[in-house]
Image (tube, helix red, strand yellow):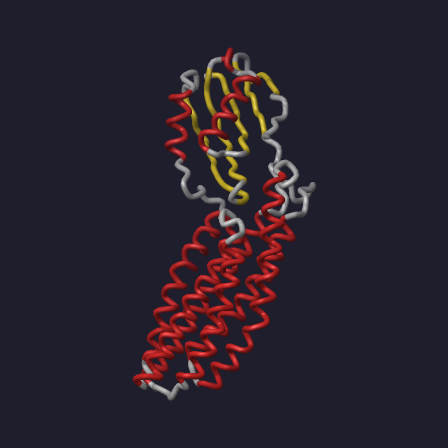
Length: 316
């Protein structure tokens, strides 16, 4: 599944040798199941975008009509969801492009970029909703509870359909998770609006509208923060979640006792399914050969889920 260029040996001074090997890029062409999964997810995103765009205006106009800030906020959230889904679809489309001389790793990271934009946009929306809700707490306004309930109920059914479509896609893909997170927040928002409408209709207590808006925003904000943080870590080439450089170093030196020292380790990810590593290791001259390099790289792949390895062996 992973291929290596033949190792090259060259003298280092009079008594040392260095061997380097680089895995070829792992893309959809090498992994048909990944390409199929991305195509399947892309189609689901397109369907979800069409459904969302067809209903968002109903909620915004309806919210203005019944004077519900929670309903308007939910409608604006759906508007951004439609844009987010369009970005997600575009991310899948761009990611299908093959690697070339200018983009040697391909375009897989574009999906991470769209996931970051989705998460960051959600954080901005959360801040706006909380600001409007706080203002409404100090200046309560009359809300039409019955009409608010009907519009919110239709919105909930719409959001549940879209959430089901997206959740059945590949949730290991950060781009898909970002789109799904948007609609999980929308579904929760619709539930909050329905509860608020019932309370307003039977009790006339208007502050419940902004209170539920704030609760909804905080729940969405927590998930948006995690999505933004995780995607930003990949964009900044940080160590991927679940990987420990010190543990990998310790394991390599225990597993291959002929490696006297492992150092200069760099670990990052192009996308969730493309984790990269470069490292140096010292050993005796007899162990600097193609077979040893292949064995170490296969071990890193199977045991630590490192897909691309550049390994340089040096004489101790």
